[in-house]
Length: 116
Length: 111
Picture 1 (cartoon, rainbow over the protein chains, first blue to last red):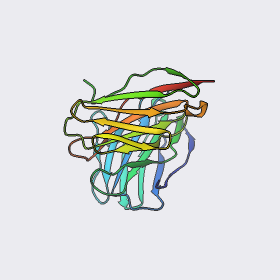
Picture 2: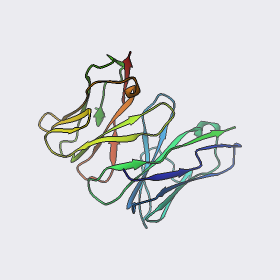
Picture 3: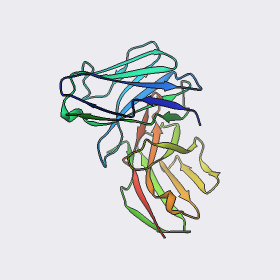
Picture 4: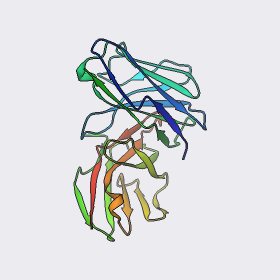
């Protein structure tokens, strides 16, 4: 399958600071990228969908001013958690899809964020 | 009603047997169906995808799709302990703009 690289894999930050997570498609052009959050023993929760060059579409209940998503190129999307709080501690995972339509999405390795 | 439903399990299957995982979805216009495997603390990895009614086989895995019943399943033959994981069913909606995941079924293969 295609390769999606997510960085960093693990980050610890202080409450009130911002954290940026990068998601790169290494061997294909990702027209769509998805950002998910997963709490322990729970399902993946879709946070937002972004298409290259356009604004992200956020799911209901996700604060777009707190979770800033940028999809500036066909190979890179970033998620910035602004003014992080302990309740934002979670496993954040990106996935990328190569073309519009029904193709499968491939996941990055995930980022475990701990806010202290 | 959830868009994609799975039994959370755990489903316990003896080594060497067939594991059967099931999933139902609510959007009759759904176009694509995926099975992902997720080990604890890791991100999901794609196992199978299926677009058309019927069966699709890949090694020990068989995906089955029945659009009339809005049902998709995954069979794992000759189950191995390394198959123990959470299996996520995922579906693209009729607009195909996003992929919706079920909550996952935890599978445990006992030696």
